[in-house]
Length: 47
Image 1 (cartoon, helix red, strand yellow):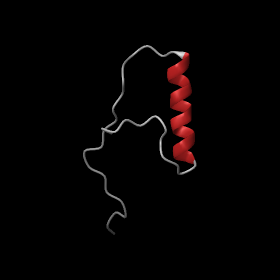
Image 2: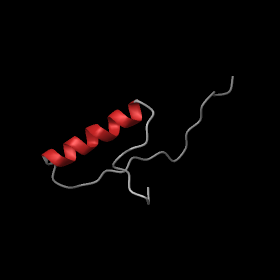
Image 3: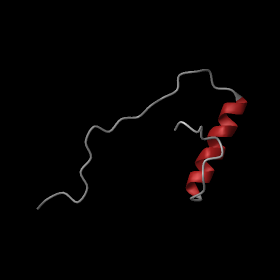
Image 4: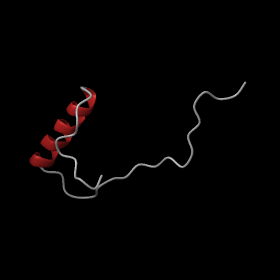
């Protein structure tokens, strides 16, 4: 039996900086938008 989904070279990128209230708000805002299937309001044009 062959796999249904195969993933190779998967990685996660972390932004290392101090967490503040504004960053937490933007992260929650981005996650909520993705959850609803909407465009990330905090996405940069280069992403």
